[in-house]
Length: 63
Image 1 (cartoon, helix red, strand yellow):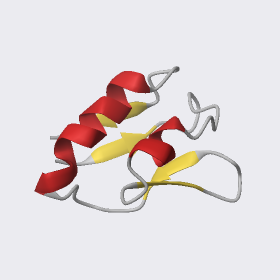
Image 2 (tube, helix red, strand yellow):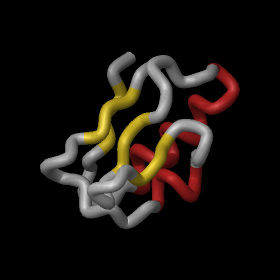
Image 3 (cartoon, rainbow, N blue to C red):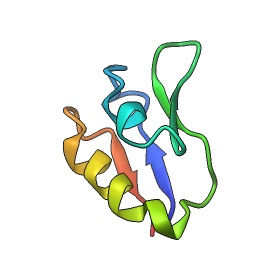
Image 4 (spheres, helix red, strand yellow):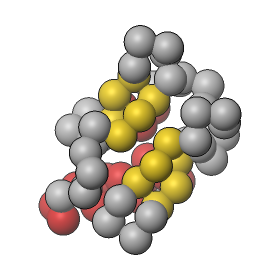
């Protein structure tokens, strides 16, 4: 599973980073980004929760 953050939609709320800090980070511009190319299998459910919980739907699953 791969995830992508759309910087045009991201508001930098940090919800994804707080849910899955192993996968998401806030960059210098204050917006979220994926830290990994491939989401580890054991974190896929948490990442799906982050996708569902993103208030602007900025995170997409690139499975």
